[in-house]
Structure formats: structure tokens, C-alpha cells
Image 1 (cartoon, rainbow, N blue to C red):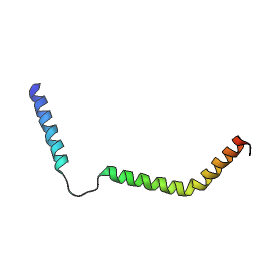
Image 2 (image 1 turned 90 degrees about the vertical axis):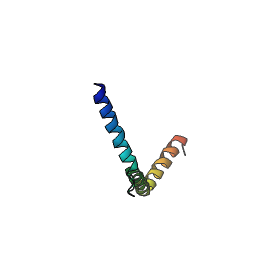
Image 3 (image 1 turned 135 degrees about the horizontal axis):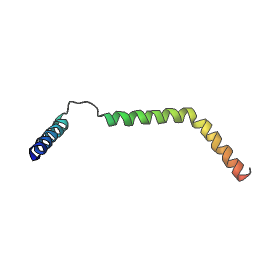
Image 4 (image 1 turned 120 degrees about the vertical axis):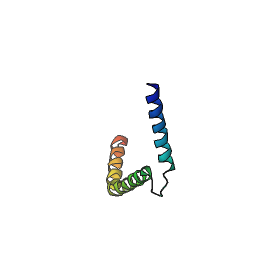
Length: 66
């Protein structure tokens, strides 16, 4: 049992080191996800911004009674 655990642990550590040492110049996935999310936010904001502004102003005018 201990031998299997040592073998598993050794394989896991070796795989982790290989992943860490694998620097081939690719952009990490999390960077692409972050950039695409920011792009979607900007796009949605540009399209829905005026409608949301109107909705907000309408709600405030109803609450304030103006």
C-alpha cells in the first residue's frame, strides 16, 4: 500500500513539475477567459447601456415623485 502511494505521489509530483516547466509561450487560458469576459461586458454595456439608464431614471422618478 505504501509503495503504491509513493509511486502515485512521485508520479503526481513529476507531472506537476512538467506542467510548471512547460513554458512554450502560449497565453494561459485564464488570460483569454478574462479578456473575453471583459470584451463581452463592454459589448453588452454599449448595447444595453442607454436602455438601462432610461430604466434607472424612470425608477428614480417614480420613487421620488417627479
